Amino acid sequence: MYRFDESDPACKSPQGAIPQGQPLSLTLRYQRGLCKKAYLQWKADGGETSEMRMGWTGIAGIDDLFHAQITVPGTGLYWYWFKIETGDGFFIIDREGPRDESQSPYQLTVYDQDLTTPDWIKGGVMYHIFVDRFARGGEGDKARKAGSILREDWGGTPSFLPDKEGFVRNNDFFGGDLEGVIRKLPYLESQGVTCLYLSPIFEADSNHKYDTGDYHRIDPGFGDEATLTRLCKEAESKGIRIVLDGVFSHVGVDSVYFNQYGHYDSLGAYQSVDSPYYNWFTFKEWPVDYESWWGILLLPAINKQEPSYQAFISGEGGVVEHWLCCGVKGWRLDVVDELPDAFLDPLCKAVRRKDPDALIIGEVWEDASNKIAYGVRRRYLLGGQLDSVMNYPLKDAIIAFIREKNADVLADTMEALLHHYPKPVLDALMNLLGTHDTMRILTVLGGGAFPDDKEEMALYRLTDQQRAKGRQMLKIASALQFTLPGFPCIYYGDEAGMEGGADPFNRVCYPWGEEDRELIAWYQLLASIRRSQPVFREGVYRLAAAREGVFAFTRGEGLETVLIAANLGEENFTFPPGDFWYDQINKEETYACAVSGMSVGIFSRGR
Image (cartoon, rainbow, N blue to C red; front, side, top):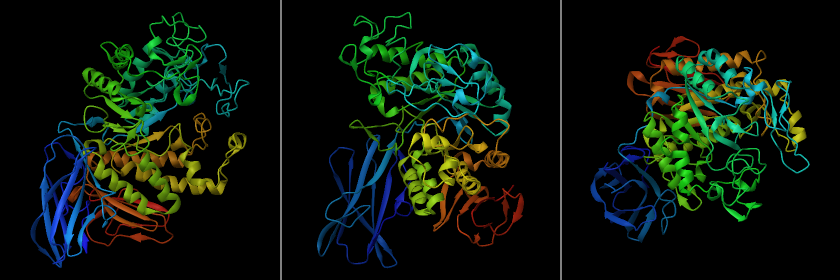
């Protein structure tokens, strides 16, 4: 009876999110003679509804065509739907229509026309390092705070049981450090890595360092400021940039700022209401009852609205600027949902002020274009804030496709990203398959039911059969990760075949000398293909096929087109013969893009 497909340029033009000031054209098709009048209705997020009668523009087949063009006044989210008058009265057409009233309108993201994202990350490969577990360089053997445990069994099982006070202290260290990262730069270069994202490196009690003790000091077990500066310089000489983890929503109880144990030569908020840091925290009953991150008392929450804290982080010479001066090229912002706009805006301005080409990535687990956090609609991607976010929706969709052969979920997720995210952001999305917060991707893909009990989890290993299955599935998943819009981020050791369940078993030591060489070579090949094909920087994405067990798409246009096809079925999947193609995986010419069962193919118009 009607047709409106926001993925069809004949229905919606231009496609996707649009810059401010860009006119939007919408065309609705309706069975000829049945629609008396058609109206476009739209509203700004939280605003009043506007209405425009759509003009009849002609006939296509058995349908009448109704057209409207609007230019919305400002940046933000807008919602639109259609109101139809027929002989039976009025009704609404939206994503789920027809119906009596709009409940699922179409989303339109309108972003700042000056929005850009750093070119250097596009087409690149990011590598995420959990510093204590990557490589030893000697600094990790230095003395740490009292209570720390220096492990001598590189590759052993991390401690995971709570102490007598009920806390999991995360105070066992395997000795990885920044010097170790420097020594492994040749390996990272061989893997095609162009950006290193380091887990927190500032002084802190724990091995994960999300309990910051001093924002101005590198943890002595990792090195010092000179070591970081040298890492930045040596990495840059190999075409690799460094991004730090910015943990600005909370600190540790054992910090310069809270100083619960009195280890620092400072007057912490726990010690005195006269502390210069007292207003950084929210005490219900000083000093023992205070707001903490997710109720974890070891992590006092910061009041991000406090002007002195904002100046400390984002002011002239503040934390953000200080580390950029050392050669750091960007920040990944931990739990960015907990950083209000009043804090995030000056932080991002501080980054741009010091280095307009620096990268700012936010940790967001959902669709970041329409995220509501703590009752506030966030404007991360509209301009002036983030360049990119961690692409968890894509991760989940790839896993659903690989494990369940559900191509529709992956196709729908990609469509949502294309429609909701500004193109400059889409090309800079951080595409991941695993992080320090998730199970290892090889374990997810190869395993069956995973134990919930920590002690059982510590002993869990894939069988040889599961591992072989997981390796093949990981090849397909990683090929999608490397070729869909955005840039891939490898969690250290995934390319080496590391296994592991949830924290801390996903944070074990890199298996130097015991890597899965087949996977290492596969990731090297993907990076090489990615580097050789310019379409993986900003090339347009188009879905080619989504059916049971098959997902295929193209990047680029014309002679620059690259076809990627993942086949989880048992039989070969072949695109019709025609133009000349080059098989990038098998390095051979072909006239039919054939992909065997449980494999992936990457075909380009030229070599």
